[in-house]
Image (cartoon, rainbow, N blue to C red):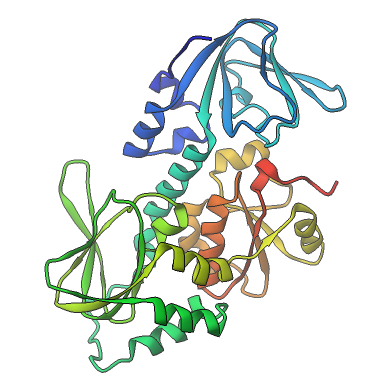
Length: 352
């Protein structure tokens, strides 16, 4: 079966790849391939776990479900812009009804790039600008952390363990703590000092996005999205940082702040008044969003969070659980009751 790279113009028409920006799109394009499939050839079978997004670029594909129901997807149709029967394990069998060109994208890679892309678009909306504030040099940074909404749901034992495992790192003015494009390995809290957050543009110029001071935390975005750093953090004064490893962040902070529910549990919670929140792009939501769910794309979440009802329980979902776990963490930071749909739409089954 011959393979060749997917034409970027075609890739730009596919959902959700079309939403990726700049380097993220290029990274996906470099690993996206299309293949010729003869009429009658199986593309995937019901029960397969191939972790790929398959699209029909040319020709027509017939899909058969467990009850024998059949439907066809033709290249060029609106349905063809979306992945075929995007469920893991596959709940339909796909067979080429005619000679076809099929694109296969790595589902995990696509989801990571989407999460990173959308988190990077909102990161600075969260960061407070302390340029105009006089910081109290005697402020207790630990007290500030303990009083923040982000830690209300974290067990006291975890907080104690976090402070015990943190490493104290002296830093100098001008020192780069985080560089855009690097792998995320640590979570930081500023014990003393100030730093600035910048992003490097495609032209190489640097835009200052925000200023951080005592008690502020940074670095969680890359850990939540399992992707690369989306900004630079540079010290503007001498100071001291408290550094927590990625593993400790995941076990002590991320895990306690994330609660997962099955599809059946989610549906029962909705009957009790909870709200399902689709954090995918609008185009993805329109294709297969859950009925009566609220659509707030991840990149818009921090802008919209103040409009949410603090008395409601929210169940975030996406295709795999990656974007929704980032969303639920952000909601929990603000004191909202938030859950994640286990396995996302791709792996969860309706209680029917």
